Length: 457
Image (cartoon, rainbow, N blue to C red; front, side, top):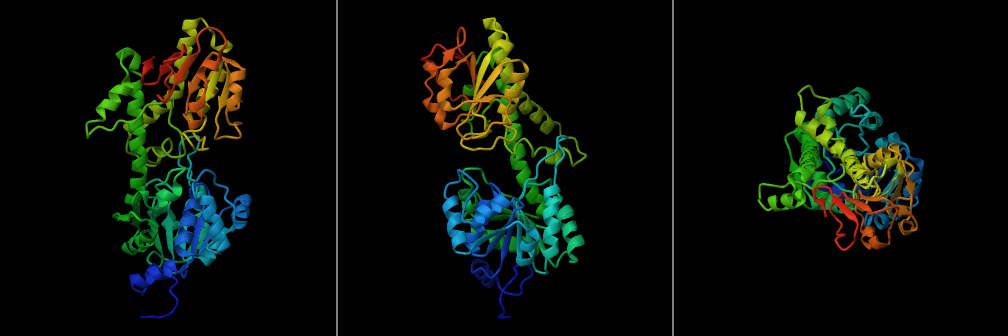
């Protein structure tokens, strides 16, 4: 056996124990491409494990902040201190030049945005650019790991082909695996380190083995190797599809509340006591950078019809309008024209405790209400800027200085537990409250409350 420095995991002639030592001792340099909300936590865990990580991001401010030991990602417990320690200990560095990172690394980890276009087509342009950069520094024995969510077959067909075309290497000379991130904002370090097992699938057996070795060192819950990269891609997408379809079911049931004359939320809760039932919660819409987008990674690239996925998307996309329709019904009952109404939205992010507003239902609720002529205001303790919303931003304390005809609870942050509901002034008549998340108990007030899925209190 060779005693030279181990600088590769893929197709190594050293035994696995020696490879693990080399990985954790920093002999095998790692590059992480994309240092955003999920990328920086991932790079930090890699750096803590290996002691030798260079992160690449095209945003100069991000790179400068990290290089100075700072952390641009907010509200991730433990991340700020971890980044500071890693940079100070030379375990983590950052560059705006992905090709420089590629030239240094033997393991290349990609976690960049994969959004959809306005036509709901997967937009893989950022991934394509990073893969081309990696190819310029790809050497025999290198391993490329894709963590960002992509349509199934992307790693095998698109990424693999691009690496071959731009590196001069053939498959079998380098490794390639898909290992999806399974993390949530606000708990990224916990998730990466082992809240769930890591899914790993390579384009060949050796890629799967090498990637498994890495994530066994990172993830305390272990690794679930699957047959190939496409299966691993499908696992990630299917997780999102399940949630979207399930929420679509809950939302459609919620629209039956008034006609059924029952509290649908109560019925769902009791139904879920049966072990084969797990209906999610209804609400005013589905937001974030995952669930509303991932269905199109299956709907658009493939010829097979997917009516269930498309229906779920349509149902979930309709919920902001459903919420506004409930407001309209209340205003009509009060003889109030929508264009004369003042509406306050509580919670503008897509879920509690995060800053992310992508696809937040509050965007559409604000836009629809404003288009109907209402004066729309919004409060969210997570956000400093609300320019993306068609409304006037208020601080929490300012809601008592104005009069409103209606309040809509879109996303329930903990700060809203302190709202003095009796001190909110009504413009005229009874204050209408639409509880989009079934989080309010206003039975001691004289407000008229409608809960999505629960009906009138």
